[in-house]
Image (cartoon, rainbow, N blue to C red; front, side):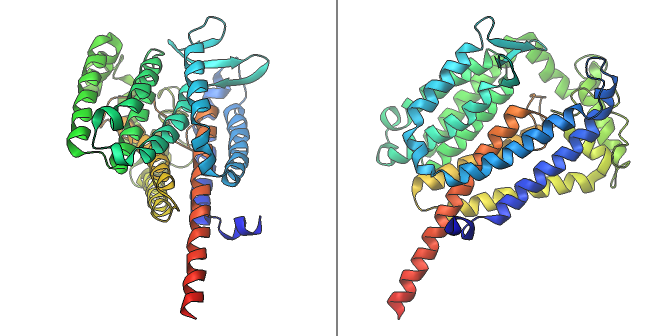
Length: 384
């Protein structure tokens, strides 16, 4: 334990702590009006109290996972993949899957007041799976059929099951993270470009195959064409961002969260941050994610083996890319995807999964620090 603490990555822990505690404050600010007006809740602290439990549980999970060797995760891949696929299929079984707002994305745990979102578990499973498989296939990456294709079949199955929920946003974020792992694993450029082209064609087909997706995409291009319909949420996000200016209207003083901006404490919490804290608050959040990216890259650089390097990069860019997608959607730079802002938005499953990912990243950092200090000791002894 002493060695563990000595090699603990405190900058990483500080960034995660700042993101989650700042998110806790903003969840309360963004939700207390909505929670007060909801007759079934009638408690302004409802979402804050739940988020507080998840943040505390997440920190504990992070510390536990930092003790669990990331190398053992490679041995658990078959179990992770099977459990993930079973849960993704179980969603569609009547009485097990839970529907909300036209989507079935959760599994009820019966008497326990908590819902599992299997697509969040899929993030962990696919990152570990891709990092391990492509580490083992380094000498076969030149051969597409033998070295590159097999894991993509599993990814395709996971992607389809998540899209059927429907949840194209989460499915896309998983594909993006896996694509980043492919890039860092070192597959040939023409293979990567070919896969990107296939992904673009699939995305085009999916957008055009469902009317609500097409309408959402068209509203992103011109939300003012349907201001009371598909463009409503994005327009009020624009108003929130514009109202914040540089310094914001003040914490808890947002107007848009008071019944105008849907999902103010989840998908669109960044709009509330912009309104209440202005560009200063926005730059603060962006700065934390940028710092997380650089810390993650540094951890990958000093990881003791290739699996650790690729896994660290996969985890880092899974979180960062999700943040980019969320902020781009909130600001109208891309279609609304329903993806939350990691470690800040309200949500139990996503919060705990992100803490698990960071716990794995922390363990890689600790193993890397131990290896580096061991190398320094050897060098010093040789020099003497």
